[in-house]
Length: 589
Image (cartoon, rainbow, N blue to C red; front, side, top):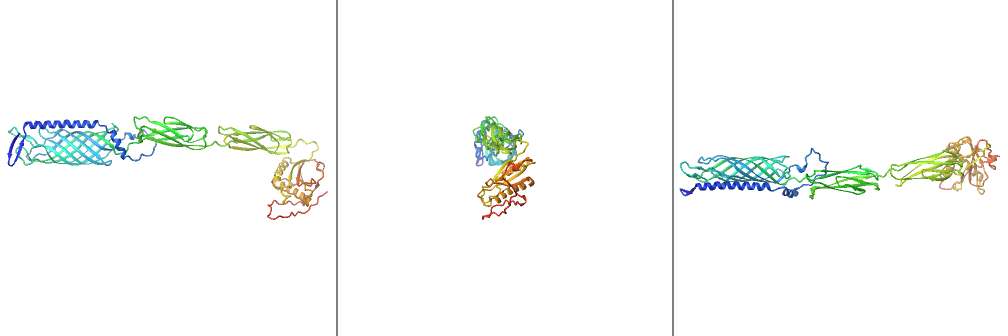
């Protein structure tokens, strides 16, 4: 080193050895920067990013419809990372010179290293290091920090930043004309102001863990005072620098939550009957690539079978009601790799049976056999049991048929009720009606006895036609309609101990006839009233065919004058007892 005295200050002139050492130092800085760049690129941000993303994850979105092919898989959508580390090559182009006119030359081979920590999806803080190795003329190192703003898009992320810091600059170093020495300024720290921006391209490698910095352009303003100007050093440097760089970016810690798989399932059909099969299809949404899902199914009723995303449910012997289906899919051990779906179905009971019932034949002679045919239908696997009820005759059941023996049965209408009952206890009924006709009469027709009305059940109203008497009169009306040419003889009877018995007997006959005339529409001319001597509180009814002799067939009765009959109205019994006021009607001989 050659020393030159300039007043009180002493400055050192760099020797050739010093310049070689400076160049060697520059090459070492290049190697160190390259090694740091390679080490950063080999580190995988995948695990680190997932570890820290969960702290800021939001609530998972609700289950949605299956993802269509046209919708990008969220597992493949670039996230907004929390931390970015970048490294690349740089071109450093200064504009300016020392106060003595020595100019700084461009440095073509430099390195940049940066880091950005984001507090939100867009804003963060930024650190930047620029290493521009010393050449034969000059060199610089920049160290800055500031704020950065980015806009994460689907494939690109543009950004801008503003920084301030220090610079470690040397130069401008030029040979001294006419000597073997250099004008040389040792490296020293100066001020740095920096602003610029760039554009990153997001790759899908390591689940968007790396990007390519397509370009970064920065403006740098450098102020450095090397001291008082002398023959071999000193001067004031004011530089405007354009720095261009490109390289790689590593992402760590997503600002957005990790995607979450979702799962939906549908039961078809949703409403069934016991014994029907239900088919279930599960649809996996947002599946994570390259991971095989596993499925599981459960149901609150019935027997479910299936291991994949489809299953079937056997509803045999299920009671009516609503049941829930639960499905689960898993692609990994993390919570966001497991999803659950729910669906439901309703079991309804089969509708009850329907039945039709008919008599064959519809008219039988008393003593003949009447056959009842019934047929039930039901849209279910249940078995049907038949049962019957009849108003006359002797009943014999045999499944869907029954027989009625009419021997000893009263002449008139026979009603048969057919009932079908299934295994679920549901039943239906139908009515079959047939007429039991009297046997063939001899040439001399005879009077036929019909049912009798009993008046002993209501002591307070001993002449009133009650409901049971009405049932007998209804059958008599059917018989009168069936035997349209016959007449009806109503014989009123009274008990031997009954006060005013004859009046009560005639009143009973009049009330019975009044019901047939006004309630059943029987022609009053076809009805004949008589007074009997049976000694009981009843009314006997007789069918009088044309040509029959009633006095001969039923002796001991007296004909009553119909013009003197006054039927009693059917009114409810008053609270206090009313005495029966009936005018005595004299019988005609």
